[in-house]
Structure formats: structure tokens, C-alpha cells
Image (tube, rainbow, N blue to C red; front, side, top):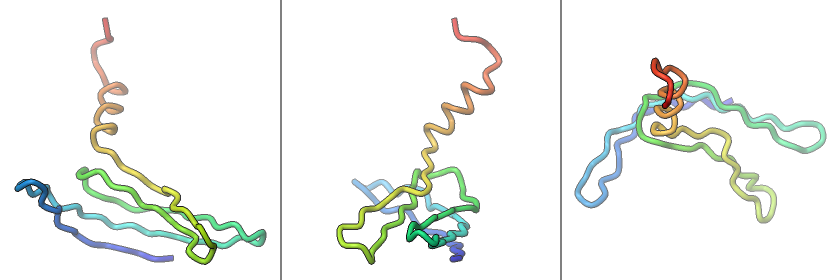
Length: 90
């Protein structure tokens, strides 16, 4: 298992500097008897910016990245709005 705790500053784009992301993730990689690999991610992060964690089997030729966790603050806010709405849609 690998534990990562860090604050990473946002990258300035077109003169706009986004907020930093603060996160604490535990990433567990387990190889199964059949050769498959299971990756689990747990932990916490602040609510901005959007980000993904991807895993790649680098020992295999042509290995492709697989997203094992993603967070999109806009989607989360939309889900929260739909789930906790006080007034039904008309």
C-alpha cells in the first residue's frame, strides 16, 4: 500500500491561477493468483479541483491507463442539488 498526503498548487493558465488541491490517499495494489491486478483508492480531498487517479500495467507492452478514481466538483454539486432539493421540478 502507498499513502500519499500532499498539497499541490494549481497550474496557472492564461494568467489565472486556480486553487491548490489538498489530498490524502491510500492506494492499494494487489496482484491476484490469476495475474489480474486490483487497485483500490481510499482517503480524502478538498472539493476542488477536478482530478483523476489512473493505474497502468507498465510491465505489459501497450498497457493502457485505467481510471481507478475520479472527482468532478461540478458533477458532485449537481448530484447534491438533485438529491437534496426541497422543491420538486415543475
